[in-house]
Length: 191
Image 1 (tube, one colour):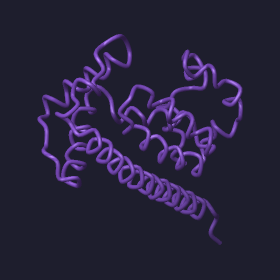
Image 2 (tube, rainbow, N blue to C red):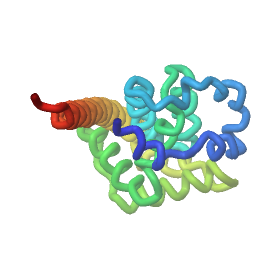
Image 3 (cartoon, helix red, strand yellow):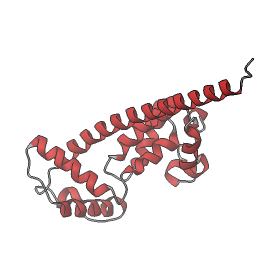
C-alpha cells in the first residue's frame, strides 16, 4: 500500500496537538478515525487540504482541521496540504487567482508587485497592528475579483488533486496486488 511512505511525510498526532491553536480541538481529535491511513479518509483530506490552501488568510490549517473534523478525513493529510500555499508559492497563486477573477468580472489587472505588497500588509494586519489592507487598497484592487478567482482555482485544484490522488492510489494498489500474485505464482511448486 502507498500509505507507508505517506505516514513518514505527515505530522504526527503529538506534533499537531502541540500547536496552541489546535489544542482546543483535543477532545474532537481523540477520534481514531481521524488518524487512519485508508483510501477514503486520505482522499477526503486531499479535497479539504487543497481547498483550504487557497484561503488567503492566516488560518488555513484551522479551516482544514474543521473540514477534517466535519467530514471525518485524515487530519495530518488535510493539514499538510495547506502548505501548498506557503511564503514561496502564495504570490503566484494569489496573482493567478486575481487574474482569473479579473478576466471573469472584466476589471483591470493589477501588478504582481502590488499583490506582493498586499500579502505583506495583510499579514502584518492579521498578525499584529498593521494598517487594514481592506481600507488601504480600496478602489485600487477588486476584492470581488480576488475572492472569485481564488474560489474558482481552489475548487478546480481540489477536484483535480482529489481525482489524481484516487487514480494514483488505485494504480499503486493494483500494481502491488499484481506483484504479490506474480510472486505467489512463482513460489508454487510445479509438478
